[in-house]
Each structure stands twice: as structure tokens, then as C-alpha cells.
Amino acid sequence: MAFDIETFILDCQDALKSESPIPEIEKILKESLSEPSAVKEVLNPAPQASYSPLYVSDELTILHFIWAPKMTMPLHNHNMWAVVGVYEGREDHIFWRENPDGTLRAAGAASIAAGETLFMGEPAIHSVTNPTSLFTGGIHIYGGNFYQTPRNGWDTLSLEKRILDSETNQAIFDEENDILRLLAAEKSR
Ligand SMILES: [Fe+2]
Image (cartoon, rainbow, N blue to C red; front, top):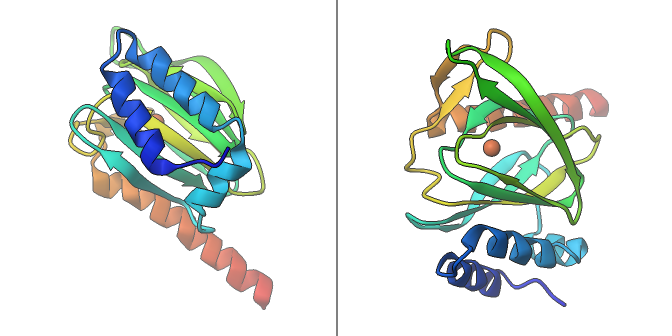
């Protein structure tokens, strides 16, 4: 069955009104990803690191993520629940917990490939790596307005907490695209 973005968004909006929105939304995402190539065909990913909105409201955000080969998105929180899924490639997640003194410790991991989904609760802190040499593509769904909700990031090396605004977030993706351009220029020499 072909993937249809409008139907997908409407189904997620309906699920939000149901008694158990999160399992419903995870089910919708998993069903949509059961034919990963159909999702890829519709989302038509460009060969660059990006995240772009498919739908944004105060209750729900649906984003299309494209992770560059070997790219890592450093530790961050969302301050809302999230259900994420992959249509191509693989996402390796490390989950982190804040100790009472504010320091962080790694507390778990998960890896999802095409067709698989993952739920994260509101307090979740994670980092994401695309371990493959190809682009990884996924759909990430959040239980709130991803762009308007204050979020934190943590420095990869020092694990120091900081504000993660949209400019800082975008800079991480821009840096990946700079690396891709340098690698392409190097190869063509
Ligand atoms: Fe995230």
C-alpha cells in the first residue's frame, strides 16, 4: 500500500484523541514503515543531513530526519514523549539519565533499522548515531510542539548541560553537510 502523508497525519491526529494516543501512534508509524521503500519514495530524501517538518501543532510534531553517514546527534532531551521510526538505514540510540547532582550516566541503548520503531518518554535524554556508511532516513513524532518547547543539549565530551535552541540544532546538521561537501570535493580531486 502506498504511503500517503496526508492520511498519515490525519491518522496521527485521530490517535491523539484516542484513549491511548502513544501506542496508537506507534502502531500507525509501524504500519506505515512496514513498506519502507514506499515511505522513501514519497519522502524523496535529498542526500544531505536535515530535519524538516511534515506537520507541526502545539500537540503534535512530525519530522522527517535524514542522518548523514556516521553522523551523531549529541545528547539532548525533547521534554515531551517521542515515537521514532526508520525507513532506511539504522539509528543507534544511547539513553542517558541525570544523576541527582546533575551529572549524566549512560543508562541503556537501542538500535532500530528499516521498519522498526522506538518510544521515548518525556524525561528521555538520548544521543543518536547513524552507524552506516549510507544515509539513514526516519520519521520522528513528538507529543508537543518540537520547535516551541525549550530543550537542552549536553556537550559530548564534558557532558555539560546547555540550552539547545533551533540555531544550535541546525548548526549540527550544517556541520555534517560541510563534512559531506569536503569529502565529495576530496573524492573528485
Ligand atoms: Fe531526539
